[in-house]
Image 1 (cartoon, helix red, strand yellow):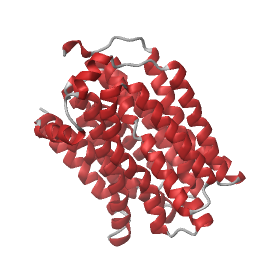
Image 2: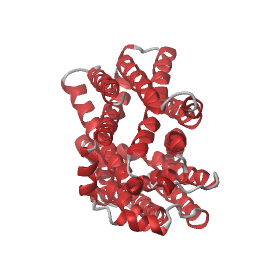
Image 3: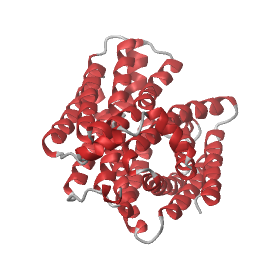
Length: 392
């Protein structure tokens, strides 16, 4: 299957980037308002809000392998379009929600639609050469980063007009992404390859086969660990910033925006320079160490400038580490199973994003405010060791 790569112009990559960015911008808009929306409008408890936030990633966990596998069977484009349709509907329901169950349903449906990220990654695998895979995957990471930079600012401005307005704005943005994909995005997977992919088995069988292959199995485990370790900060960084560091909620938003800017710049630019000089596994190793250092140092740097330096180290680390890991997974996956393997990988990432914040919040309350960051750093140190032992 050496001829599986489909040479294409750079335009499809630009379209995938635009679609992902616009869609993630909508996601970033609603994320900051979910706790207050559920609490003030539906009297949801803090625990209920936690489950509400986790519901999106839980749905991604269940459906990402499904969409990845179906993209191997039917092509990338129809899966991308269907996911965007579900996303638009979910944000409309978010704005129209009249009860807590309806709000839960909107987030679950949004997670189902957002699970089509595996098809977007498989699309990039189709249109890039193996040596350029990390650069292509970096575009997805940059789109995520930019969405989290600008989305929360927009959501904060719009929420003054009511909790429904950010939801409708996110729906409108996802509709733009849907129309862009419908009219401008070509299919990347020829029908001949779809037939081969369809014959290779179901997702569960693919998971078992992938885990039996030492390199793929280890890379999938590593991706779960880096996601789990980093996801500790989703719930606990705002808590420690307000309670221990004395920042306001608006300033915490600025800090998250700073993280997003550095991460997007790294994945959209720096990774291109570095990947031309270093092997992906070397970048993976360096990224894991930088991320571990950044996580461990967060609780001990309260001043604005020192904290920004620590967050920059953390963001550069994750910006190098994630696309390098994805590029390695794509390299070692069978060409006929790119969508399926990447789908399983994204599902493991979703599991990390479900369990990480839960673990972080638990140790934050039960053991101490520094422990989510320390345990996250320990997990990333373990990743560093495993990379050295298994990928060399």
